[in-house]
Length: 227
Image 1 (spheres, one colour):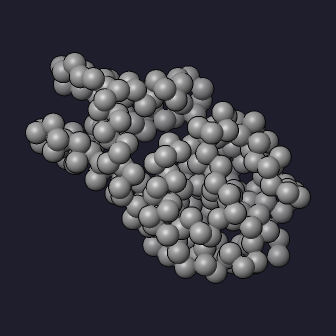
Image 2: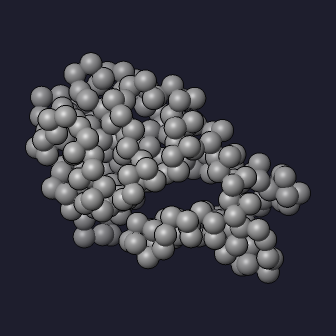
């Protein structure tokens, strides 16, 4: 067995964040009595992705991302809103949705007997804990590491250093990061000297300078890599 410690991202790796995001926006717009058109959804999705990348690069704080994104979003449409309140409502709706990526449960059930499984996520702690619990995936993991609680985020080496110090017998050579994000999961693994698996079901091109150790487009393909 080449890898005994597996570090899994959550969003768009095990749980379908695109589905959760759309659900949360639909619920938020319903409470605001506003229509959520495909164009408005795409605008929000694009802005949110840009803000998360800025957060990963250390350009903005977590608080700025969570409290200001709806201010920025509605300013685009000429509206001034209570971005903090909207953000709280949105995160509450987000936590309600936990659709799994195909074969997530089967993969974890197959791996849990011979591997140590951990969550490593930049998501909001309360949201991620609820989604993992209600999806039924939480039972497969030895621990859940969340940037909000650690005080460091992917791709910072300090995030992975905390994880290494809190897993008994942690060994870089036996550990593998699995995630969908080149800018947080794969780059973070590379910075810390860990092998990585880029989960890329849509076959997106890699335009970055970061190269994963492996690339898969179906979760069950991971089994051949780790066993």
